[in-house]
Every structure is written in C-alpha cells, then in structure tokens.
Image 1 (cartoon, rainbow, N blue to C red):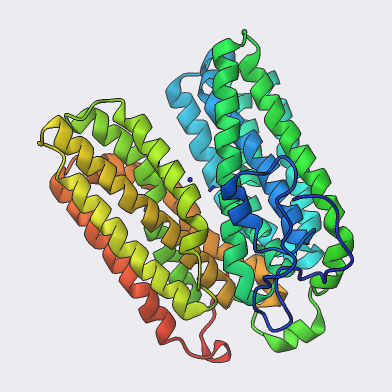
Image 2 (image 1 turned 180 degrees about the vertical axis):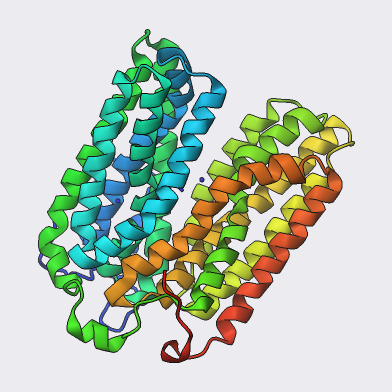
Length: 457
C-alpha cells in the first residue's frame, strides 16, 4: 500500500534518552508501556506503539505519519474526480502528468538525499513538507494542461523524495536493531491513516457539493503543513540522537560515501520485488475486469482484503529482522510468495466465476504477505549498507529501484504480462522468484565495505 514515501504524539519526555525505543545494548525495552494516547485506542494502533517507551521521538513520528497519510488518503480518493471534473482534463492527460511527476521524483530523489546528509534529515524533511503543501495549494488554481503538468511535476519531486528522508530520520532516532521494527510501526500507522482519510473522503464526496474535490486537495496541503509543524518539535531531541552532518568520526568509521556495485544490484532486485505494488494497483484490477469471469466487485474486495491483512500482519511479520542476513531472507520469502501469487492468477483466465474469485482472493493473501516481507527486507538491507555519514544519500539510491518500478511497471504488466495471458503471469512468477533468491546470495558473499568496488552516482 508509498509508496514515502515517503511521521507523532505529544512532546518529548526528558526521562527517556533520545534513542528512546532501545536500550543501550540495542534491545527493545519492554518496561514503561503506557496505554495508547487518547484518540488512538484501537488494538491495532496499540500493536504499533505498545513496544515504545512513553513520549519518545518515535511516538512523535508516528503522529506525523498518521496526519500525513490521512491527507494522502483524502487526496487519492478524490483526485481523479478533481482532475477530470474540476480542471477538465482527460484520463490520458492525468496519466501523462502522473508519469512525468514520477520521472521528476526519480531525478530529484538522490540530490535531496545528499542535502539531507549535508544539512540534516529533519530540516530537509520539514522543507519538503512545506514544498509539497505549496504545490498542493496550487492545484485548485490550475485551469489548463500546461499548468497541470508543471504543478504535478513540482509536487511529485517532493512526494517521491520524501520517503528516503523519512527513513533516514528514523535511522537517526533509534539504534540499528530496532530500525526495521520502527519502520514497520510507521507503515502500519500510515496504512491506518490512509484508510481513515479515504473513508472520510468517500463520505464527503457522497454528501458534499461541487467544491468537495477542491476541499480534499486543500486538506491534503494542510496535512503537510501540520505534519511539518509537528516535526519541528523534534529539534531538541534530534540534536542528542543524531550525529552532526558530516561528523568527522562518522567519516572515519565508514570512509566510503559512494554506493558499491553490490548495493546498486540489491536496489535493482528490490525494484523487481516491488512489482507487487503494480500488480495490486494495475494488474489485478485490469485482469479481473477484462480477462476473467469473476464479478467486477471483486476488485474492491481485493483492495479491502489487502488493506486489512497489511494492517493486521505488518508488525508480526517484521519481528526478528535485526541485521542483513534476516533482511535478505525476508526478501527471499517475498520473491517466492509473490511467485505463488502470480501462479494463482495465471489459473484464473478460463475458470468458473466462483473458482476464479477464490483463486484471486487467495492470490491477494499471498500478494500481501509478499508485500510485507519485501518492505521489511528492503528496510533491513538498505539500512545495513548505509553508513551514518551518508545515510540519506545511500537510502535515496536504494529507493530508485522501487521508484523506477512505478514508472515502468504499469507498461510492463499491460504490454507484456497481460497480453501473454497464463504464460505472462508464469514468466513474471519466475522473475520474482529469481530476484528474491538472488538477494541473500548477494548479501552472503559480500566483501568488507572497504574492499567493495564503488561507483560514482
């Protein structure tokens, strides 16, 4: 379920250290667990934050992520109607704008990652939130295609670049053994916020008047400003937890600031595994409606099932990933489980409606489990190879794999996989299984960082 993407509760408590979520030996603390804050009482949210001590910076980041994702859920629910009905664009024009935005984001991600290393992840992330808000506030004033393309690209630059910066900031807040689990908690909260925002937007669209679409866009812009303002409250805590940018001691600890060829290969393999996002958003909906006898309503059921399972399983499947080897094993699992998903889909082209629906729902379960394992493994691998002195740069390089997938993936599925039918899905299954199997091979035989060849990027 962003992508950034590419963030949490009341202010800091001086009784806890800045790394908050971990003890000095890197293990998770289990003491001092308060009840969830007011307004966040659901069992699933407590699952995300229950292992964190009270009032840590990570709890604060969870609040930021929730607010950000609520706005995103609102916007994505009403964006197609806003672009086509309010602005008057065609579906093809909207698709062109979104594609150009993704390309712009791809080009801007690494420079922004470098800026986060130079000036610090927190100020860069706050700036990105303000940048995103500014261009989303501009959307309601767009009245033709050229301006739409300009605003879409400028907004997309911030959207795609924010994810690695968020990950870099979280890497500054917690010790390495807790980073993957912290990212899982953030993703869980983002999914909950997205669902809340999408549900609110759906109700507003059903009940609202002609200006409701513009209101949803403006509310998304407001969510960026609100989350950016909350991020500013981390300044005092981050000064303790995060080494100064380009700290000399960190440079000596990991002198090489260019990604190795091995790291780039791992980023590409992760991009292949990230095809699950395109399968969910493009492949399955089109396949269900055009190539199977399953009811069209199954498209909505697939999305709901994926969302519910992602929220329910995110924290459980993230346990035990505290190093490169466990992270690589999760990506191995992701590859084979996603291959099973594609294999099940390949059987649905000529089956009876009930059989096709059963197979597709089972494939969705496999897709969701594979999605979680892919993301958990990606966090572990990307953190494991990223030196502190250039964490933002390395994480932004790694994210190019998934960003590239979102650019070329839809065309791959609609032009290659789906026209080939059963053979296309089976071929995709082989590609995913091989990509997953290669990750632990690349990690297991890695040389010490100082001995690895590095490439200028």
